[in-house]
Length: 356
Image 1 (spheres, one colour):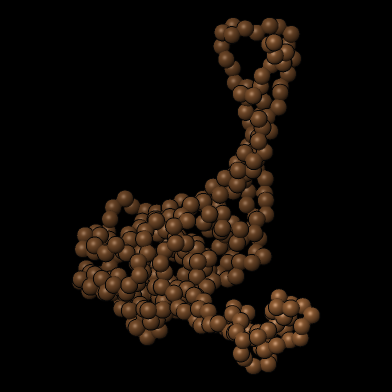
Image 2 (cartoon, one colour):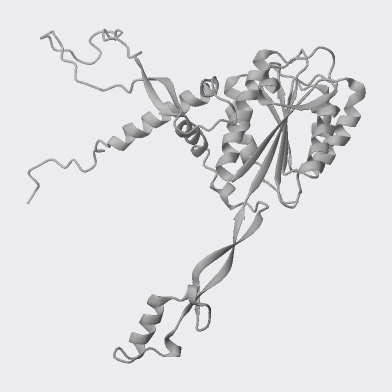
């Protein structure tokens, strides 16, 4: 007997999850394009718990039926098509989102689960773990009363306790692994690095630090500023200090190597170094900078050279680095505008991290 009702099984049912995914995608796109809004008032190392950021996104349109006001029949190709008379949907709305959730949204969409499986160097700490084992001899404070009673009941419920029933707790040492990371933020602070270039560098360092903090228990952040000489300074001075004169990039690399030798044992620490520069350097300093960079690549998990300028050409320094350094843990990045920041960060995540 034929079916009375029309079969709608091939029609796609409305799925509210689709709207939720669209909403999430709108937020992610806005965050990628406006990373600077996340850190305008935030310190790179500041705890983000409870911090709220306001973002403005497009409304998701709600489709409705529009009824015609004319009674005339309209057939296909009767008249040339005209623009609709309904207003376009250019509405925005503001929404509040926790700052740590905003960062997680950006990191989650990278879809890089393999990072959790990498073999990072880990520092082992021995800790006691109670109740891991039982034994028949021991001291009274470690008497396992419930286990002793269970042994007695198992043997004979009505009988008295005997020595074979007594059980003691044994502390079995267990090793817990804690990962440590140190990130060296190196930046050219000469006069050619204007405020816009420094802001782009700060955007990159901010999201990099938040990313590493999710994967390591302890993250050290070291700021090294250089022009012709290099020094370790605080975060505020790193992004606001400007110096006149030329640039010796080798001074920044030498300072980084000096700090590593004094503070960080390569057997216990994952070391990452990133250098932001506009590519300007004294030509007679390039050979020394190349030599020191090769030394850095031999002792860090990853070195990223980030050139910040709005041209399409490579600087002489970046061309030298790319031609002369074949280490797999060396990465060249270029940032020209805000949208490049997140793309550069994704390239950092895609490179393999090595144990040395």
